[in-house]
Image (cartoon, rainbow, N blue to C red; front, side, top):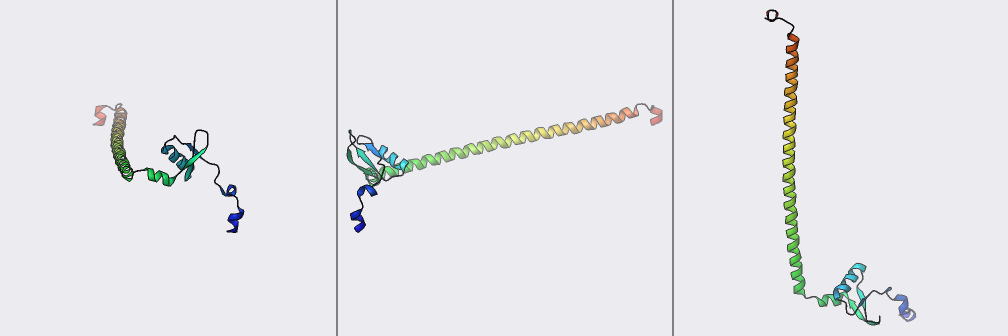
Length: 140
């Protein structure tokens, strides 16, 4: 108890003060509290004079629980729709990629077949050219 008697309020006060104007909406106070990670803001008048304090409890009392529940449900539905949309996009892109892979595989297989046929043709043609200097009687 002795410590309380010897310590000034200024030594223990929160500083700096964060303020909102008295004519601002509670949303502004809530945003400041969230951004600065504080639990209360000072409300000031037109001349900067202290008018009051808004606390987290003040904000909770201002919200209707049914409105909060409805808001949460609406957000949940939006998240579910976005997730379903994202999943559909992934599935569509996956199908497109599978089709691209199949088409590319077909092109590679077709080119490999052409290359094999070309090698066989040139191999057979070169063997026939080697035989061209022989007469039919010699071959047969």
